[in-house]
Length: 291
Image (cartoon, rainbow, N blue to C red; front, side, top):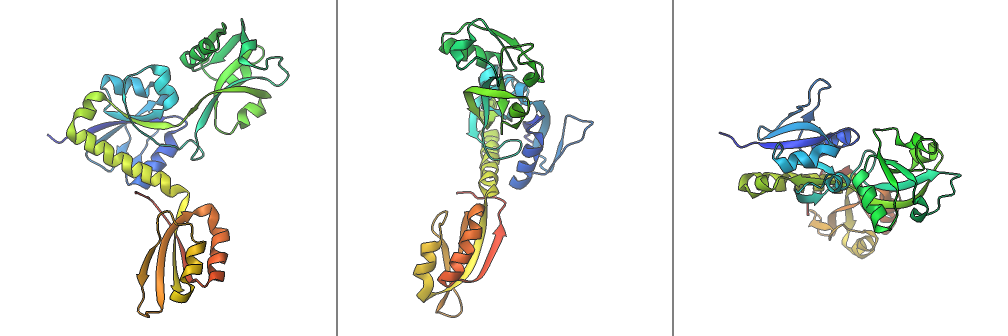
């Protein structure tokens, strides 16, 4: 019987970015609105859509061999899982999200100490209770089923909510008092699954390629030709990811250079390379960067 890896894909805000990331890594996942079992072009993998909040619990129990969920939900669930690798991506960017304590813009609350005896609404009850305990504050923490931002000040004195850009908080006239946690997705595995040699190798290879896809998101490749006499000036301009690759062209006076750079630097870099003597400069996209 062929071995299969039961893999949880986070349903909700991370779903689209996760499917896109797997595509970059080499796995084509097709999601149907009518099914919680997406198709995948790998006969060794069986996917299931699971809410990120529940992922760690199902991985811990063995219902899933592995999955992706935020560090926040691993801590909130208290699940005992193998944390294989942090993969820093989010709904709209390659950054971490923040769990913040927020109040109304005109609130008199300025610090966590001002929450004594107050009411806090949040989806992350355990995280919030631990945060209050660390600061010696006693407050009522209520579970919020959603639309948490609108509960201040009528239904709660403060909220603990996740934010990526802060735009939703600002739109609801909320002010951040403190940050409880910065969180990013983690690839997690069931402990028994991790002890299985085949599954561990499958997971490690998958994580390597996912991480390589993330590293490639913000980078591009550059190819260019340069005369040997201009090589020092060109090398001085290039901020190589490692050392640039150089190859001899048919004309012994010319070299070809291949390197990887941050995409945001290219608009300054190409004119500088041209001025330093580089010719035939080609920029090309990357799918994966694996060290």
